[in-house]
Length: 195
Image 1 (cartoon, rainbow, N blue to C red):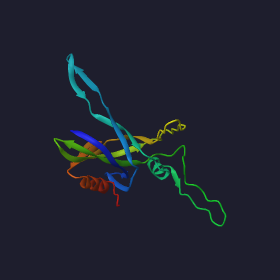
Image 2: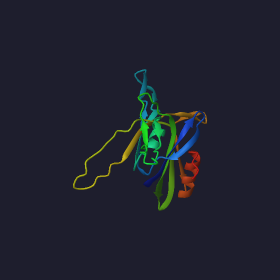
Image 3: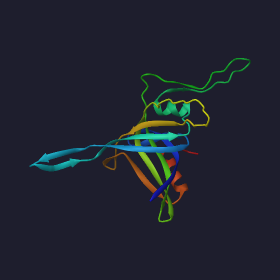
Image 4: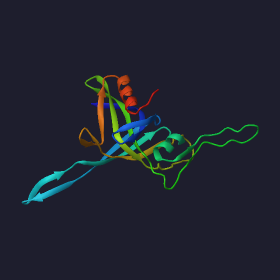
């Protein structure tokens, strides 16, 4: 099995009972990394390992995107967003901005995307959905333009936490669809996005 590409990173505000509202497309996808943080405990008894726990505690996430708009950054991180206001009658307007408060708390979001999958010559599409993710402030990077152009893109990191789904704790789910249209449709419905 091989995966080729990635599309449509979406987020939707999470509420108890795994309800999602206010969904939106975060940006154009570049890459995603999910690193599970696992329990690694052993109970030794009678000079041997009697029990082990290798369960997942949470998952570190890193989403690379082409651009993180101020509006979407404010949504994901709990900041205050201010739209640009055009000036009139010779008056200067105000630029688009976000106010980053030191005590702002990032809300929880369901986060997902889909990727193309090829196995035995058959193409399908895998949807990844993480139930409850809290993001953290991205690192600001900049670099002078040199002899060649290097694009500067955005990466936002977070942590996916387990929630109760059908009586057991779960971080997220994977689904495989036979067409891209079905994968995108499921993802957008899950995130409460209407195009």
